[in-house]
Image 1 (cartoon, rainbow, N blue to C red):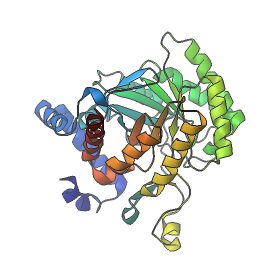
Image 2 (cartoon, rainbow, N blue to C red):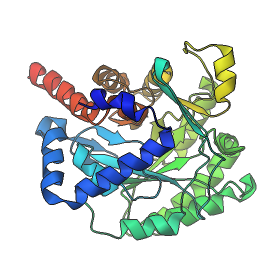
Image 3 (cartoon, rainbow, N blue to C red):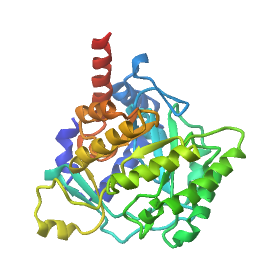
Length: 347
């Protein structure tokens, strides 16, 4: 059904449609019969879909990636669509408007998005207020970053503030040091910067009564040598896992010409052009760590087959974003049903 309405949806700017879909989902969630209807349409429940990741138990391997629910306003509504986990954010200490509009573009012929949102969000305190509400049975991840105005030398304090305030309300954290849409943020993947950020977060976690997983989200644009350094640090410091990968600044695997690429401008590319690179990175991490390091795979998951390939490459969980926009909520159901079919055939 979504494919019938998608051409109509795509007549409107992406941010406009995001606001419409968000409002629609919140409306549905407030009406119990509609909420139940949607849940019954999209949720797939079966013991063989359950996964354990970094000590957390997930009802299925499919989650919603960060970026869709920046302010923790949608996680309750989107829990009805079959996701087992939803990652909010990226959240920064202070609210900020992000980059000027337009800043989100569809490249329909390539099944892709280009965004240069710039960590637009209402700030960590606003997210906390939303998370204080009684929440549904869904795991919540907190994706944390620094304010654009914060110098990289002061970035650890920004990450720590978000970490402290969100700690009672989320189940795991993703440290976002790889988004290409905040000036110089990717420099925080440099070992000295990354070590300092992780050090303050790990020290703070040691003070808490409950241990919550900390993951690092990496860029698809780093070299394998850089990735090796990150993996070594993650292992030595006791970081729990990796989210692979963020959006890319490259424009590989696209059918549009240079003129159109220049028209869309800078920003992180996601969707189908990223599929092979994301798989390559996840597969490399699995081989490099002998499968010991938990990996959450994201990037270019547009179909159930893409998700299956990501899991086969070594990911325990997968996250969708661009695929969700192009394929609609049925994508979650299709992935879970495909996994269920494979597991039942094995048995």
